[in-house]
Image (cartoon, rainbow over all chains, first blue to last red; front, side):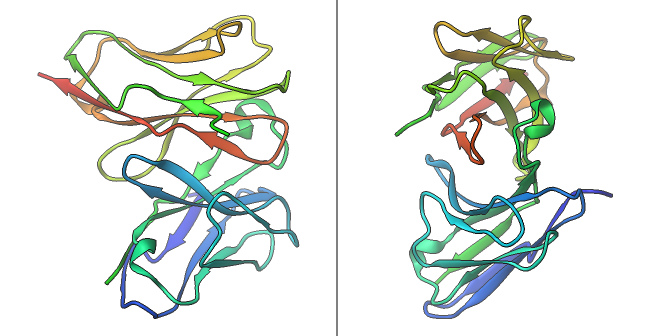
Length: 116
Length: 113
């Protein structure tokens, strides 16, 4: 089925460990995004990639890095995990330009990350 | 700057009744899109309905309708004939001519049998 695939679905890290969250989409979308979701704060943008070869910081980029590997894949890396990074992470993709209903996001199923 | 405001952290509705979830937005772009997403307890984000800034009529998708009041910058979601499966978090979002979405903080809806 077409969509956005995120891995892993669950992860527990110790403080200081590193990991990479993987995201891939097969809808030929140009733009991809990483969000974190925390209770009472909605979704906050970490990084986004408007098109292949470009990445930009969002609202909460500190402690994260991203790589737009190709048009399909956009990964999020935590170099040294901290308890404050305990959250649910969502990857999303969209058409680059807002084009009506098609300008909406397609979300991955999320990664629940706990840092202890 | 806050772009999307959802002032109702939690809402309750009786099964089969209608409920309105509030959303106001702030943008100076003349062209923008408004979206509502549903997040059930399983965690996935599900697209519900879309309204374009130039659309003359309010959007409808089955039991969902969007009460779009452009002058007031509001885009309230109306769910008619509520069902137990409607219990979830609901997020309002806006996309302008840029590459970012702006999300509200969400409203938790509980449908009471």
